[in-house]
Amino acid sequence: MNHLKAFESVKKVFDLAVQSGRFSRNFDKVKLTSAGNGKCVAEMIVEDVHSNIYGTLHGGFTSSAIDFFSSLAMLTHPKIAYNIDSLSKTGVSVDIHVSYLASAKIGEEVIINAETIKFGRNLAYLEVIMTKKTDNIVIAKGSHTKFVVLSQT
Image 1 (cartoon, rainbow, N blue to C red):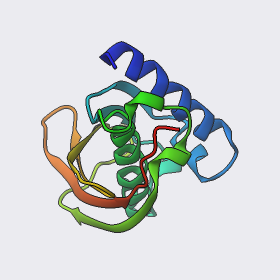
Image 2 (cartoon, one colour):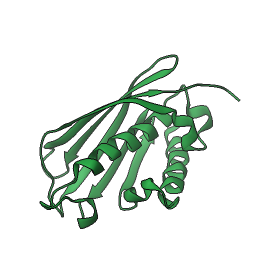
Image 3 (cartoon, rainbow, N blue to C red):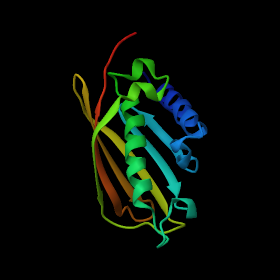
């Protein structure tokens, strides 16, 4: 699947998830900028709705972003990209680790880079790095393992 088709397909899944009214609605202010070949990039400006009482990016939002955007990246991996149609293809989380390395204040721009590191028979290993756009300071790094059942049907 070419990058443009992968991006368009993942964008549809992203939009459906955000518009569902469920938890993914929290990403409504995040902009998906690229997706393909097991990777996904998104950008956002930290706003009040994303922040904690200190006016910095909330850790819960960060960990949720690692979960969500790594799942979107996985959808574009060649093992699964043949049929991107819903988040139901993303399997279930087995393990998520987040290291919080710096803060991002309200008004700062953040880049979310998600990548599929390895896709085995039923396990996908994913990584996410969140950085400040202005100076590339790493805000958080996350690893995510998912159990996925692949089928061509």
